[in-house]
Length: 128
Image (cartoon, rainbow, N blue to C red; front, side, top):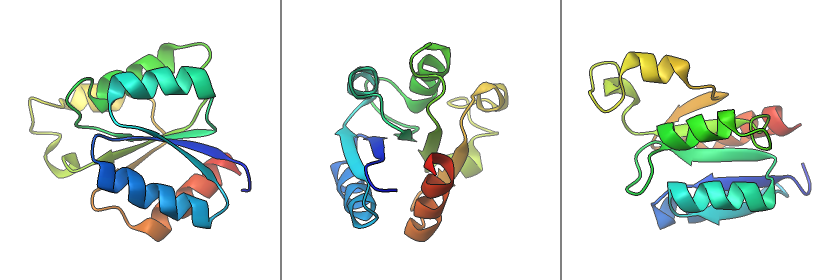
């Protein structure tokens, strides 16, 4: 896992810091972005090995970011893990209709709060 670069896109600085520290202990290099627009720019600049992406962000939500990643020739092969606090309500929510969720090409979904061991295990599987 040494040297694998993981881009964390979340508008919660505490979560970004916690996941960054977790990845560093596993020998990975965390890259941070604090919103969807910044995250897309950083993904294009840095070409990470994996993206950890929050759903609900102010400037550009995770659904829009994931859609852009999947359509971008340079980014579409990068695995994406979505973090959400709305997963249990997504099927009933006007924010995230069922069809929008099904159409996203993400590799994994994790509910917040995230189980650190499960997140690291899945990241290792995807970038291994």
